[in-house]
Amino acid sequence: MLTRVNHKVKSVVPQVGRVWRHYKTTRARAHAASATHCTMWTSFPNLATFDHTFQVPLDYANPADRNISIFVRELRKPSDKPEAGAEADEKKSDKKYLVYLQGGPGHRAGRPTEGSGGWIGAALDAGFRVLLLDQRGTGLSTRASTGMLTRMAKRDGATATADYLSNFRADNIVRDCEEIRKSLGIEKWTLLGQSFGGFCSVQYLSQAPDALQEALLTGGLPPLVAESNAADGTYRALFPHVRAQNAKFYKRFPGDVAAVKRIVERLLESPAKLPMGGTLTARGFQCLGIMFGLLSGFETVHYIIEDAFDADGELSHEFLAGVERIVGCSEAPLYLLLHESIYCNNGTSNWACERVRNEPENFALFDAQTAIDEGRPILFTGEMMFPWMLDELSEMAPLKEVGHELAKREWPALYDVDCLKTCKVPVAAATYVEDMFVQFDLARETARIIGSEHRDATLGGEHVRQLMTSAYNHSGLREDGAVLFKELLAMARDEHPVRDDAKTASATTAPLSWSEDGLDTGNFPSSRVGLVWDEAMLLHAPALESRQLELPGRVSQIRRTVLSEGLAQRCRRLDRGAAMPQRRAHEKRRTGYRHT
Image (cartoon, rainbow, N blue to C red; front, side):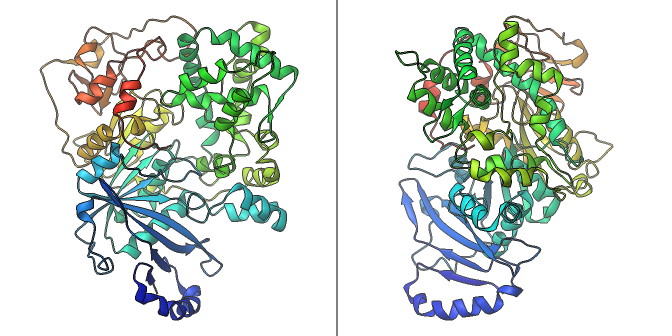
């Protein structure tokens, strides 16, 4: 039984009591979203928004227990705004809807502004109505805030709080989406999943593929979906990428080698007190490396380091506040508490990243004191959560036992691999070659699984169309959202043109040559070439004709062409490690709002 309440219509107010009584009597039987509340339309010059709130079960295995709310903001073109009072009568069957699944875990969807463009503008121009979902536990949905979780842990204990949070993974986010889709009367919709939102999208493909028109993923193909515990293997694959990003950082800012050493020596001697009351240690400072995978991340860290010391030689407030803004989790506690659970598929993580970091090879590279003793640059870590954060971050200290309970929990399966193999839903993914958040080769393995038993074996190829590029790290959707969205949508619909300019060659004729200079980057080239390839095609800008490209063995043919004017401009940035023109002009042009 579904009850729909529209707060915009004043005549409904006298009926609220009757609706509430009816809701209470049917709650135990309700498995669909039990109520929809719609607020007033808000209009920007180029955008109309409509806010929805849905009541869904906290635990779908026990829907009679209690409900939580899920907030969804709907975006439309102003011309698509319904007449006043006509929202309930509107037919949605002939409308196209796109659901955006945010990165995280534990982050709310971005908030549109007057100048919102980027992928949102491209989606609206393509005829979509866009739904921005505050995933359960975030934003205006029932929020699992630091304060609320702290009070719950104090009142109910760590185990009960961990039990509560066990309902906030991707499987239940997908179930929420399904209840919302059914409540709105939408037959099928399109997904856009960024990072962790892509993980949720792949879970959607294995749980409810019949609800999807197509799925677009950006940096969001989850690793090792067939393994019970993908965490260890994922982190072992990511540490070399993090090491490579460190090399590029120090190549761009060589003076920071000594500056970082000075800061670390000061913190090893005496940890500093953070503005919110936590403790900054050398290992906590190294966590700034999470920025190395994002737009302007190198510069952000450099400017924090630049502000490190006051005139009297003590660490400055500006420096400490800057570090805390990046490494702190006060506004997104689920990002720390549930981070490793996203890799658990019938398994447990038990602080896998800490375990992998302490393996001899990684410990020798990333331990700050060892680096100082050996005269090497001190390396920063990446998107990695460690148990000691629960001690050193003041806002997380009351949740220490909750974090440990979640780390040792045996998590249920997230992915049905057999269902993924038979997937018929069109899928297009932007996969970033040097992504230090989602490892490229592991993402490729997952792409090969999806639809592997559906595609025509006589034709070959892969079901998942991939735009593989080193023009971005992890934040391509943030940087060039409109370009990526249009390309992925065209690929998913098989509308992407094959541009053949007769400059073809076999992969075996391309020399494998990279110049090596500066700091050791492991297996990754220090001179980056901006490239894009899609299945059996390698697409790159004409400006790179003279460069020698390293090709994956699976690429059998090269077609030298320009993917699009916007992406070609990105591809001409050949070396992120060396000094390069600042991207301020690009930042001015970019009007899309930020996403994680």
